[in-house]
Length: 221
Ligand code: GLP
Image (cartoon, rainbow, N blue to C red; front, side, top):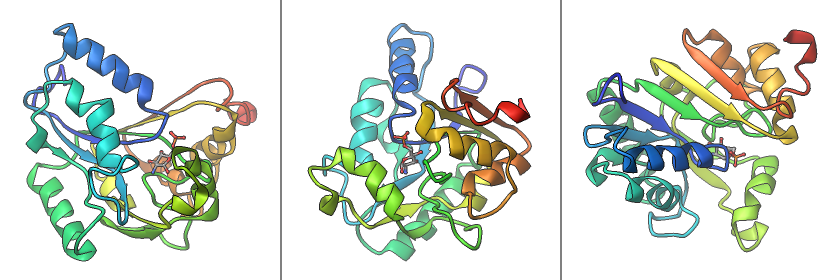
């Protein structure tokens, strides 16, 4: 944003980005970063949750970032969890393209190597689409809900192709439960069974991980 005040950012939810968001809020309050010309597109949203639902990713983004910085609300975009999914997905892709594509896509990685909500699969997905969440993702994300039964089984996610067209990608990971995903994504075979592995083919991708998340990478570093 310092380099390009009207940057288009791809943004994630989850615990991985939280400290970064706190830091961005601080830098905005200190007058270092101005978000007034920035546009954002989030990776994903649970199907069936509207933006006011406490566990919706729209609400997460409003609370943890957008409401605390000087970004224009109309410049923030999160896939809609309700309404006509196919039409919403087409509109989302069209809006990203009309904005000139994503300059910097920030993201975490799931324990099973998913990026956004692109779960392990036989094929790499293309644009924004509807996904069935895997048991391991439902298990990992149930901590945010009152019970596992309340975790939506489906979601909308930006596709792998959309993510790969971002000019830069920045992945953050911490903790031992990400160690397998980081090893396989960074050093394993490029396969849709580990969606994050596609980032090995990205021209400008950076992974920032702590020692625990790198603990299975010893032979490769
Ligand atoms: C969710 C999100 C992903 C996120 C992942 C990891 O499933 N859809 O975008 O990267 O979880 O979350 P956390 O950072 O909380 O480990």
